[in-house]
Length: 119
Image 1: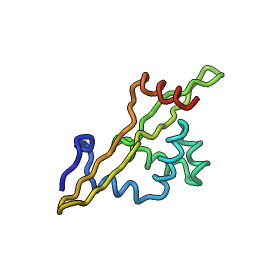
Image 2: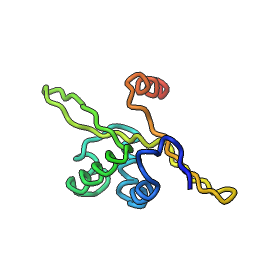
Image 3: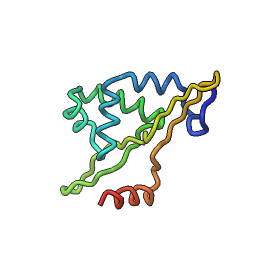
Image 4: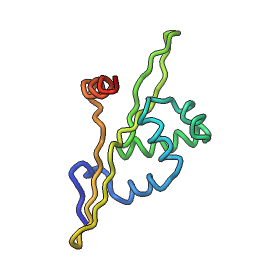
């Protein structure tokens, strides 16, 4: 079994275990569109906030989720979460199992480029 360099910090069993959870898949899908707070994710996914936080911790530890700060009009801010998972690929060929993860960049310039591309 081999793995791409982007996966060196997380093992295949961890990734597969995470993706096996339907709520984690819902969280990744929802946060791939727009940054959401834990409360917003709980409402969107139909899961308690404490359950959302446990899953967010696991996703963050695996490098598949990142936190951002969203300012509010009242001068306070919210912590919101953004999926970093762009692609998960598993290939079995010639007696070899190969897998890899492509993550979205946390770089601000990359984020602006992606946002601009949506217009």
